[in-house]
Amino acid sequence: MTRLPRLRWSTVLLGALAVVWLYPVAWTLANAIRPSADIYRAPWDLPWPPAIGNIGEAWSRGRLGAALANSAYVTAMTVAITLVVSVCGAYSLTRLRPPGRALLFLLVLAPLIIPTDVLIVPLFSMFRAAGLIDSLPGLALFNVMANVSFATLILTGYFRTIPQDVVDAARVDGAGRIEVLLRIVVPLARPGILAVAVLVTVFTWNDFGGSLVLIQKPDAFPVQLALSRFTTFFATDQGLTFAGMAIALLPPLLLFLVLQRSFIQGLTAGAVRR
Amino acid sequence: MAVLHGPRRERAIDLLFLLPIMVILVGFLLYPLGYGIVLSLHDTRGFDLTGFVGLDHYAHAILGDAVFHRSLLNTFLFTAAAVVLLPGVGLFLAVLVAEVKRGRTFLRLVFFAPFVLAPVAVGEVWKFLYAPFFGIVPTVGSALGFHTLTIAPLADAGTALWAIMIAFVWRFAGFNMVVYLAAIQALPREYYEYAVLEGAGRFQRFRRITWPLLWPHTFTLVLLTTLGTLRIFDMVWVMTEGGPSHATETVGTYIYVTAFRFLQVGYAQAMAMILLLLILLLAAVEYRFFDRRATLVSS
Image 1 (cartoon, helix red, strand yellow):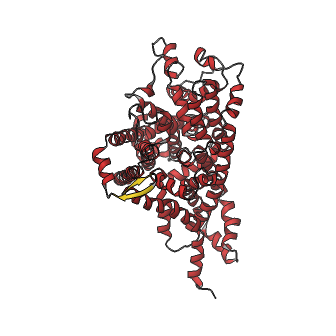
Image 2 (cartoon, helix red, strand yellow):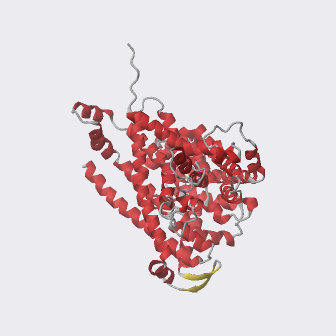
């Protein structure tokens, strides 16, 4: 005789919680393709037929297309610079012997307790003096600063798992530092480097405070800034607003769905190994 | 002719690899920190220094600015709630998810996903969820037969801060869950098997095994939550801009308004330095407290 699997209370509770957790995103995506009038009139109906027009209108009239391009540019530049700087730094801190290593490591960790938020006023002043207001490379530089510490910290964790013997043996055989870095350390730490790249991508893409202060010209708005202006500007057109929110939600969500394992590994490694 | 020879030269070359990150940290951390201290001691016109005023800005913030006091109180309350709720809800979810046989990856994905979403997007989505007429409270309430169509939690000074807190928990509980879940799955199974043999119930197993062994992770998460929440700006700014009537004003939003709307730059930076001191102080207190508890547990 077969018995039905018993439904435990914890399973039921988890299912209910999962629905609660999914609801805000599902609601936003559904309303993005729902005609504006139905958002009030029929909030529980399926959005069918989908009102795709909202998405296109948000893209062009709300200039979200241009903002996405700005964000992509800033994010790519930030990730590239952060990776080069933090890979070199973590390599020196873990597998080389620079003088004053312990003290330098402390300095590298300092931004983790001194957030950029409390330095935003002097940073704005510096950026203004350097002519970097409304500059996308300037915004990338700000994001490098905001990410480089935790990136280096996570990478030192991965680099420490590479046996020093392997590094020493290669050096005795006549390999230079850069050769060791590129031929041994980087290939062996590839999961860590990928995890850091994904995390920096999402954090830079999602940054708001930096761009709010450093970018004033609408042409240079990254997507988060554009979205916050957009929802104020089109507040009376709900369908358009939801379409804008959906456009801003989807890129990091899709990236996460594809690379969720390295994302979570990188984060737990960073959080647990502190 | 080389200046340095042998091991000293080798170590100097080792140092070169740290040069880029050091340039960034000196240029974008130490220099602005020093300049920030200078700014906080001066009167300003626009972003230019005018007269030296000593600690006047600090004295005014601490003694004479009711809005600053309100923002401090809000920030403390919000952080205190977050420190309990984020690791708390995260641990609750982790314990439940760890027991699930099938679909664990899917559940982890669902609860963690909000963490990757932008604070602006999350803030906007929840602002609409809280909207009157078509938001979640009005529609669910009316579906159940209550007169809730005009209720707007973010517009009510009594509920606004806690409405933001719910969105905050939704966004960050999954991160806490993921850290706890990884730790729970690494705990030795024999402890639990032995405890079951000894007749320990579900709650006792949690209380005597899981909770003490997860203590280091609780410490990490409490510290991360404290550091991340004391500086909160983006979600609050998007959802309420600190209103209504400063009910959700945090130190972060007040610094921003003071510097970039009222252009009281020196005064804003003095408040930022006070916030930094509070962050360092609380981090140190938590570190001492947890260090002692951790030694007690392990001994």
